[in-house]
Amino acid sequence: MAEVTVRYWAGARDAAGADDERLSATSVLELVTALWTGEPVTHGGPAFHLDGGQVRPTPLQAPRPPVWLACVWPNRAPLRRAARYDGVFPIGAGDSLPAADLRAALAVVAGHRDPDAGPFDAAVADHDPATPARLAELADAGATWWLQGFGERPRAADVQAAAGAGPPQWAR
Image (cartoon, rainbow, N blue to C red; front, top):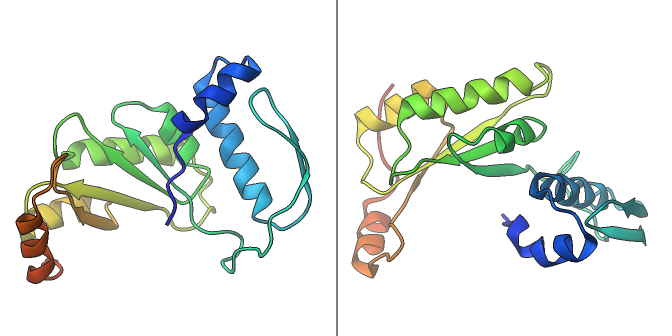
C-alpha cells in the first residue's frame, strides 16, 4: 500500500502555474498508472512533465495495483475521480463516518462509474471499537473494509489492546 498525497506536489503545481488541485490530482494518477505499464511515458500536463520515463519492474497485479482514493465527505470531486479506479476511503467531519454518509458517497461513485468496471472497495475507519451492529450497518451501506482508528494521538495501550483482541467478529 502506498499513499500518494497530492498536497506534496503543491510546490511543483504552483511552479508550473497550475492553479487547480483537481487537475494535479488527476495528472498524478494518470502519470502513475501509465508508468506502471512499464512502457515509456511522455506526459506534458500543466503540473508535471516527463519525457520517455519508464518504471521497471512493473507491478505483478494486472492491469495495475488497486488504487483507492481518500476523500472528506461531502466533497464530491474526489468521489467522481475514485469512480475511475478501484476504491474509496471516505472520512467524515467527526471521528467515524455515519453509514448514511457512506451510502450517499457510494451513490455518487455509482453515478460516475462504468457498470462493467469490476469490483469497487469502500474502506471505513472507526475510532470506537467495532460492534457487530456497527459492522453490519457499514456492510449494508457498502463498506468492504473496516479499519480500527486510534485518533490523532494513539496510545500504545489502545493499539495493543485492539491487536490482542484480533479482528472484529460479526454475523450477517
